[in-house]
Image 1 (cartoon, helix red, strand yellow):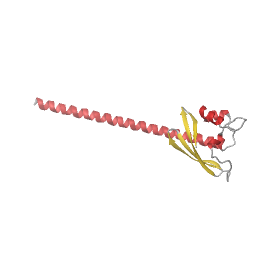
Image 2 (tube, helix red, strand yellow):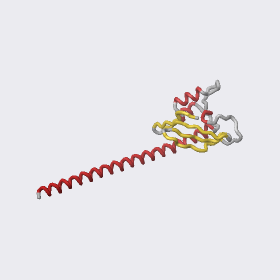
Image 3 (cartoon, helix red, strand yellow):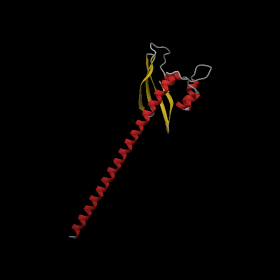
Image 4 (cartoon, helix red, strand yellow):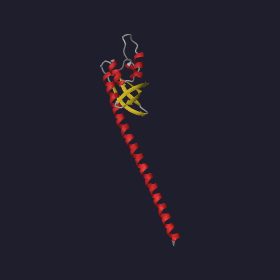
Length: 157
């Protein structure tokens, strides 16, 4: 009788232990799922902000008529990219090689200059597709996000 009672208690303890382990695993899975969902939501939010910044930059400075000053470059670009754009500038009066964000064509069949698509490629890289005076082109821009600040770090053709 005592042996049967010990067996029942031992069996009950084992079942309770297994249930606690199962509950712990379910909590861990749920927590991980919530973290993944949160990271996914944050990435989607970051991507939307980057898309907006890229479109704004192209509209105003790459295809637009606004002057690309030191202040503008510092707002949109890391020091590394600013230095490269300044070094690649071909004229004596100083400036930035903003044309590196465009196609390599100087003239086109159309006056249309617009971003047609921005796509997240992962790892902070965004593909920008555009119509540059009738010439379809694209480049990839590496982006660094520092808090609320989004900066272009590299351009890949």
